[in-house]
Length: 396
Image (tube, rainbow, N blue to C red; front, side):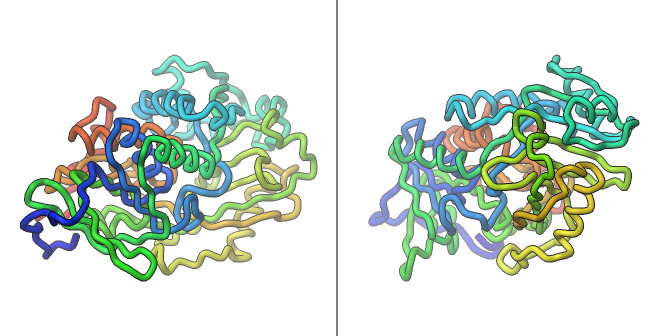
C-alpha cells in the first residue's frame, strides 16, 4: 500500500473472507502458512514464482544451521526453538556435520561463537588453526587462527524445507497459489485486509482478517514504509570439485564461518546434493540491486573471488568449477531481522531484513508470524527485531 492510499470503507460481501493471507511462500512464508494452517485457520498463500524457486534467498541446496551464534548470544534461544520445529517437521531436514567458527584470535567470529557457547552451556571445543587442520584435513587455515567447533551445527536443504512446510500446509487445509503476483493491498475499516493479485491473465481480489508479508527482497515494494531500511544485495555462491573428495564429505567436513585476515567473512559446506565443495563470501561484491533488474548470471569476476579464497583456505577443494549461482540478501542497517506487526496496521505481520543469516530460523519465524497474525503478539523473544528501533521510517 502506498503512502497516499486510504483504507477501504467496507469489506466486499461477494469476496470470500479468509483468516489469513501470506504473501511470499519462500523460507519464511511457507513456514507461516504451515503454522497458521496447523492452528486450524483458513489460509491462502501467494507466491509470484514457482514453489520452491531460485529468484530470491531460499535456494542453493544448503543453508547453515548453528547454535554457536557469533552474531550475538541472544539468538540462541530462538535457535533452540528452530531446532525443535525442524525436528517436528521432518527428521531428515537437519544434516548434522558440526559447525566451525574460525578466525584470528581476537576476531569477532571466534570470540562471539565462544561467548555464545559459554553463556548457553553449549558443548564445544576450542581449537588452534593447526589443530583444526589436523582434525578436519579439508581445512587449511593459518596455524595461529582460533576456532570453535560445536557438534550440533550442520545444514538444511532449503528447497526440501520449503516443500515440507508447503506439503504440511496443504495437509492442514491451506490453499497456495504459485505464479501469482500481488499488485496491491489495502487495510479495511473493520480491521481486515484486501489483496489484489494477478494470476495468469486475470486479476483477483481476496480478503482476510490478517496479512503476513514475507516477500524477501520485494518487501519494500509492498511496504514502502520499510524500504529505507531494506537493502537488497546480489550474492554469488561457488561450487568447486575437490582434489580429494573424502576430505569434504559431510562426515568429515563441518560447515564453517570464517573471518579472513583481510576482513572478509566466508561461509561454506561439504559436498552435498550437487557436485562440489560450496563457498560464499558475505556481501560478495557489495552490489545493491533492484531484485527485478539484477544480473542473475554469475561472471568470471564472481568466480575468481570465490576461487581465490578457496585456494587460500581450502586448497584441496580448489579443483574445477562445477557450479555458480546468484541469490539475494536483504540487509537491514544493523543486520538484525525485522519481525513485527505494522506500526499503523496491526493486522499486518512482517518478517524481512534477514541479512544473509536468517533461513535457519524460518521454522520458528513461521510460528512467530502465526502468533502475530492470529493473536497480535508472541511469547518468543523478538524484542530486538522490532520495527520501532529505526528512526528514519515514514509512518503516517
